[in-house]
Image (cartoon, rainbow, N blue to C red; front, side, top):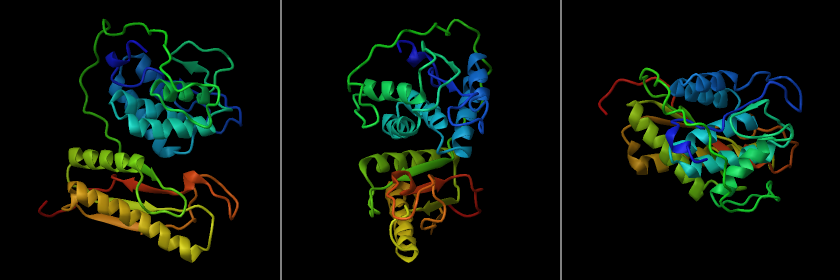
Length: 271
């Protein structure tokens, strides 16, 4: 998109009011879309962040937050979410979308498009080559009146994914942890909670220990990146709180995760 650099938040906003799999989330994304259309970009990004926090497994919220990361130049984090949106978005068709599209366009289609533009191939995008794809330019909104300046919206929750039966951090995971550390430093001293999770393979006892090791791996990386003076609490939930429903014994990549929560209030002390 030739005018992307002129938009402080994603210009490829999608909104679902009717879902291929039902209407449980009617209107999801609408507030962010409306705020963007009114030129209120910080408020729009705040809505997209809140949507993702409330529906982290929904391909629409994954896509919109990925675009937010993309506009800030955080492509590694964006591509993690684009891949998730591509994996789960084949049955979700936006009824409003700020780019040329037709009635058959799905969230998977647009997620695959941006992965291709970043030279990333994906198993869920077999018909899209990993190469730069020209995107039709959007109308130039820079001439419109700028909205009043508002405080920046901060991302408070980060999700880190792990390989099967592993607690070590991948390159993508380290990038997400680094972004969480950067955000924690921007927002000031906070009490951070890191919660580890596993998929449904193996016993609860084994997975409890694995989930705790995953949380500790993230704490260690955050300490290494300069948050050793901040209280970081770790906990493990085994497979008791799956992100995606799965049967016992099924390897579900999105359940092999840890959640970094920066929403806890500051605590007193010398930092």
